[in-house]
Figure 1 (tube, rainbow, N blue to C red):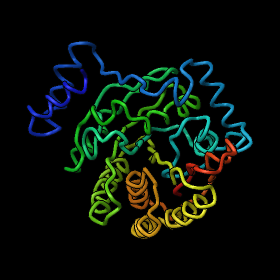
Figure 2 (spheres, rainbow, N blue to C red; figure 1 turned 180 degrees about the vertical axis):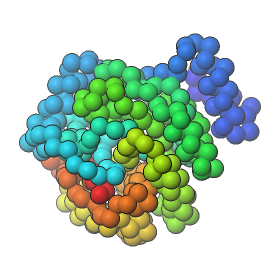
Figure 3 (tube, rainbow, N blue to C red; figure 1 turned 90 degrees about the vertical axis):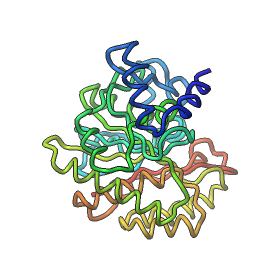
Length: 311
């Protein structure tokens, strides 16, 4: 029923902006004062119960593949995985054990194919079992007004997990006392035309947050190779990661093309690389790379996970 309504809306409105203005102001506003995005993957990717979720995140930190302790660093952006915590949680914990308290731009790939190519929610809050975190409406408005590629869009975020799974880690560290800006990116083939669009988005993000008094960190959500043999994943992913660490987005895309690498968040990573350089980053730093095979010991078809910092 819900999807049929979306399809009907697509036929009525000329642009996603018109459609989402209607949804925000006439559909959602009549039901509650604040738009609350409900969790889409709680109970699947991570625990549904708040206390169990806290224990799950602590176990990711303490895991044999995890960082073991909290040790904050100064950095501009980070790349983190977005699989179920049982698989990628210990790798994600490396970035979240280093992250300081501030506000966050969270970029994630659009796996569903619904919604805008570069979709932002402009207001409201996202709920997890650990509470609700508010969107920074002012910064969202500034970013979207600075780049015509960006659109207000609820649909791209409705069932997408890549941004959602980052929030409990931040809530574990800092409670709900931070704000964020979610940007969902519809990846295309890693062409240089798409890279040009990523450059426009990345520079717009950087130009806005460099003027903010409050510190912002960019989080790019991505897994790496998908469902290939263990040895192949290590070889391909580390070749691709080497390009990322150089903060050379063109070389990164060339390596993706050369290896036909199934990195689902290459758009968010490229945007984070570009924005980070605009904000003064000089290099990348690899904190951890592992695969699902390192957790399950089934190495026939694995998914790669990485925690990286741009400093």
